[in-house]
Length: 435
Image (cartoon, rainbow, N blue to C red; front, side, top):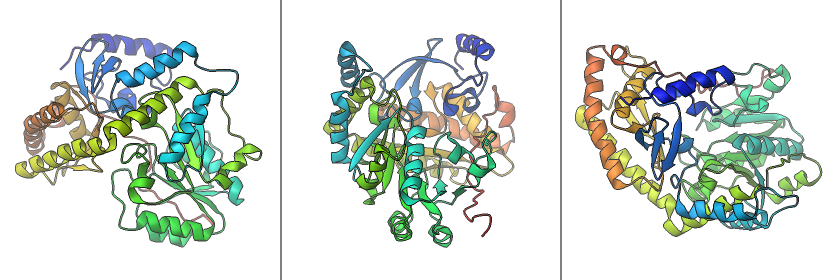
């Protein structure tokens, strides 16, 4: 395993002055085996990162999504540096605000108009707020993860500090369960917000029928495209599935690591931001991120990035499936999702799934692979990287198989078990309390 002494020293320093110690849950020490996994990264290039101890890793987290192209892409860095010479944030609006909006208008199906912010939670919350204002309704149906703001986090297990009145306005539904939505939609529902897909694929016609029943009910449909935007297709899930949402939100992949979030939608709805709905931020027009976004989209067009992500991800997904079938482990592990972002699942009778995942992470670290259970594909992942990864899986999976058979998975771990995420995924409460 890598020497992570400097990481651990920095971690102890951080514990003295930070709470929580991580600003992004998925990057925190709870999602990486404490004691054996690096805690702090120093730099990145392409699809590789180096930790503060100087260890090099092939990265499949890719900044938890934003690095769709890879670290330190020359064209993107040059765009940022060129803008930096002129300034970052100004006292009036900047031309890039218009230029990028024109580009987004041309590639995103529902982008009649465009609004900017800095984080995904900002724009999902703005979308819900304007949907409530437009419809005159209050209730929200949601499916997926939509950020830390009150309207969403109130339906999770980490909802302390949120008034009951706000919690009682949000309801969850199971993905692909169109009948539950039909049965619950009424004149009190302002919007339905969902990730167009996470890892489960939509049933035939699910998204199309969802759009239809929302329209018939006077409910706005919001696509949270943090993960799908610019990855599954340049125009996101709306382009890929041929479904237009009333509002859509984007971040992560649009600026290759720079902080930018985007809300797109119908003009008649978005016009409410002019006078009736307040959603502004000092850094909404920050120019470095807009320059990065403009350059990233140009790069994606030139290099057909969405097509490349699909091809590379499909190769890895197919080879993994072949391997587990060959080993007779398809009842234990699978690779699920669309190729641009896949997840590896692990389960075995009598075993803690988190222990199985921790075992895999520990063994992959010894191969120089930084892995959190996902393949977040980037343009910078090479065929050689993918082949190296499959060789690593081919060595590690048989060891996992033996550890399961001998019930030694947990005793083989040299670090701590990974922590479970907090999000509710199967406690759906779509029916209002008084129904």
